[in-house]
Length: 136
Image 1: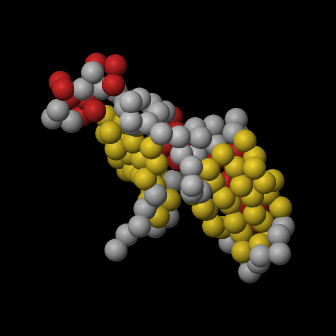
Image 2: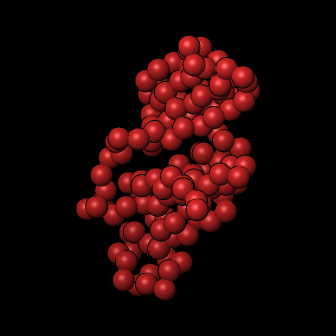
């Protein structure tokens, strides 16, 4: 069984996944637009270049996403994408990279459970938690 986060964007999926690829050191494995689908002619022309499915691998983990048509888009709430690192320096780097043009909810710092922990909402509206365990 696999359990993967699937993020929904309001037309910014391509930019977000390229940003995540850089921040997380991952690799975009798929970036399919509506124009790539057999049903492309049934999609409004202004929506054909929007992302129907994106897949980013980071190590052995997968992050997926797509653009939602405006009439179906809802802002994200009720979750965070959590990134764990064994290296405090790498945790700091990832936190600051993802926070670019975003909103820091809790600065990355030492906590009673973690060498480094921080929370942010990135420039695309996705909430993140960065954690580096005590053993790191």
